[in-house]
Structures are given as structure tokens and as C-alpha cells.
Length: 108
Image 1: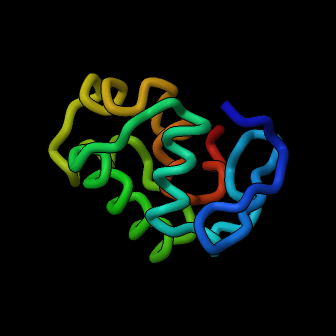
Image 2: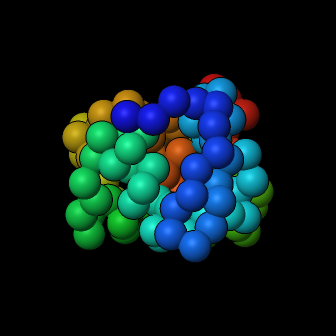
């Protein structure tokens, strides 16, 4: 696992993580960065099931400037709270939003 805050080279880009291991600049996000964060920060190997949620959150964030509320996420994707925590054990804010490269949710 890596230490936060810090600057790291991921593929062809430099990323900076804040003290909570969120991207300091969400525009540096890419799918390669998501894989790197998942493996090195969250200890996860991403599956298509993970990617479905990551892409939804990233798209929502790009459109609205914030992570979706959990109820909306569950409703829109037709998943359960248990599914969400099975996929992202550290939770939707600390795991899912972090991997999706968004800023820290305001409700956290």
C-alpha cells in the first residue's frame, strides 16, 4: 500500500493524492489511474461489476460535480447496499468515489 499524501507516476501521468488518498486533481483520472488506486490504495482487483459502478459514478460526477447519493446509486443501478459494500468494502465514499477519481463527497 502507498502513503498519502503523495505524488506518483501512473502510466504516462503524474497523480497527486491528498491526505485522504483522493486525487488532488480529478482531471488526472483515467481508467489506468482507477486500476492503480484500486490496487494500491483499496487493495482491490477490479471486475466488470466494479467498472459498472465506477463508470456510473464518474459520469454522474462529470455531469453534476459531486458523487451521487447512495440511494440514487442503488436505485439507478439496481443493486443492493450489500452488493455495494461487497464490491467496495471501505464504502462508496472511501472506495468507490476514490477509485472513480472524484473529489471527496461533501457528506463525508
